[in-house]
Length: 403
Image (cartoon, rainbow, N blue to C red; front, side, top):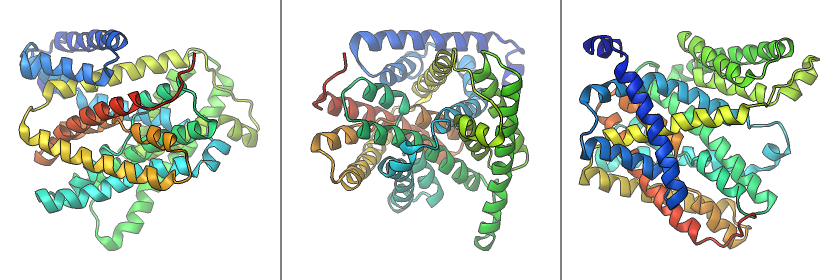
């Protein structure tokens, strides 16, 4: 990124203008969505396509700066997404009793990674690791779309909990599996098969230890320093923790997972630690929504800007979409075997890939290389197709809308 800025005369204008454009586009996309009910994801990506691949309206130097920001913004987005998802993993009956949601959330990612690893190797000659990364990325169903949707329709509390737990676990599983696989693919984590158990222990143990320490220390800080901006400060601690663990070559995203679970279950830990800690919720929702808006808009518009429109990736996208949809269909029929058929149709329809998929795809694109670029282009198509399919299927489900 520094090199790019030097080439531009160290001017911050491209960054300021680029970020401003992203925010304005996100605002317009939201307005169009409210008027047309066309999924916001499709609107944002379409705007990106119109701006660059079709219209060439964004100067190449500005687009280059936006691309250079992907590794940094991608890491920040990853931490925010992981923190927001993991803090919802409460030590209560919802998580403990909803084995269906937990199973769904894990299998979405794991089965997609396994199936696509072998499929992409057999049909396209990809190394297994790259197909697995593709599967881990598109194994995520988007919480941003699913949760607001199910809150707006009348369903049983049991079904709501299954879907809520699934999307929460799913985002966590997708990021964790992706992070582990990416380390192997980029050669950062090299080892022999015999060394794998000790490697995994060392790699994860540092993250778990520092995540626990950071979580407990932060609970004591919250007790001492009470402030309305605790959510922002907590996100900052999560980012700091991620950077420190990464410096120690540990599983940085695992540390955020542990830290977020401690913060999310603050009342449980505060009881055992004998501290009266309580996070201030004031303003948290608005700040969280604003951060998610920026992340969502940046990555979806950027995907549209840098996508390569070709028949090849269109075909690949259709094939991979058929695979992930088929996996979800089998999971729905198996896990929800005793549920009402209408409920099965609803859960099956909740398949759109979202901001986590876009973020992870952009991260691998920023790394570069033929396989990572192809993963990015395929993910773009899968997001488009699953969003369209989901919208069509949801429009045909017979659930009463809450007033």
